[in-house]
Length: 175
Image (cartoon, rainbow, N blue to C red; front, side, top):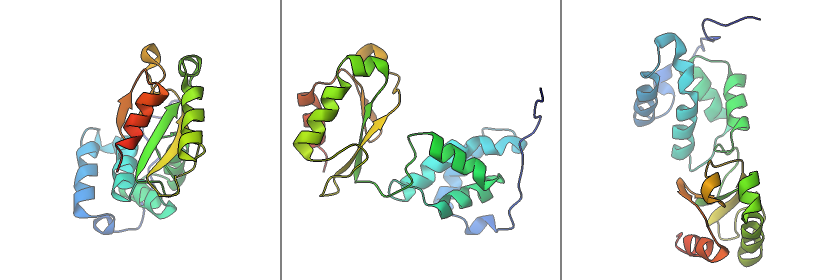
């Protein structure tokens, strides 16, 4: 068994001052500063989140390549993170995201009922965006709220123990 003492660094031949806006670079640099210099790749998740938020809620291959260049890491390593975690989207999304947990506790306590309700009432299927672009409807892995299931993530706010009517209220409040 081997243990890597340092991350695989790839120095990209790109001027980092041309990657992103100064504001985005400043936000990413705050996260980079939390790690030892040789481990700045550890900031990949917050960097992807910052870039995704600045791009209207989704990541392009070019943006992921820019994150790799900024963090001196292999592009494929950024792709692995962006495709593994459900919080990253690789295609355009609605103005909001409604994400229903699909883990065992949520399934047992009503998430399937929530999904069926939203599909019927708002005419949108999992993975789709409403015709008016108001929200993208997603099924996600565990939201860590098993005690108060079913859980739904609306944009970046967690909601627990939801009924279809309570979810309707949340959705109806979206612009």
